[in-house]
Image (tube, rainbow, N blue to C red; front, top):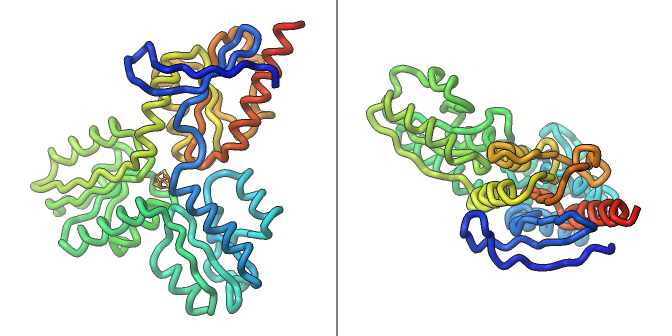
Length: 316
Ligand code: SF4
């Protein structure tokens, strides 16, 4: 690696004291956002899985991919022998095996089913998602009609709805509001952890116009907020932005959307080989963002590939 590393002490575009780590390669600056890579919840789940794999004699499975990052899933398989199962009726997860519940959580009955078959269950649901599940359960008990703002196909949202006994409405966009039964006048709202606040505000305002009472728990995770603020800062500071993360990762996709929303040309990549250098021909300042499920080693690899490329361009 031939680039030089400096620290920028301030952000001259917003006045916000948010650090980035800056590298120089040839004539190009590479600025890596402060909040990049594994969040606390993902790191916790990963460490729990590795520790379990090292100490258990029997097979260890995660229920669904532990996190939305294919490189991490591959590493868990190759280095620690951890596979994932997708069907609760998969008989491999029986007596003597251990099943790890992923960060997004699952329906309560899924955990019970594994236990009935003799598997040990380790719950790696992120505690922040657990809080949202608890709010959904509470609101349902208090006879609110539960509204979850989020993607109905996302495992986190599926798990939250299950804590409201499946009796609620999931709203992905404004067009879903009409799916709330007309006779439901008391609405209890929770939010998928990775959503953009602006979008949530729009939906909540529309709910206020159609219900007698709206009780809202803002369950957007602080990690999401920090990273989306970074995306804004990085997009304003740089002419190109690279977002590293799994294509199925909701928070990674949102970072790319936020960066594009602030006018940056954004590339979403899963691994360094995905970088499209043709699109970076005119680049002078490249910002790098990474989702909450992107391992640090992948960010380092992408940084090194960028530095090597632009250093080589400078001497050619
Ligand atoms: S982004 Fe937030 S809610 Fe999601 S795993 Fe990380 S800490 Fe937990």
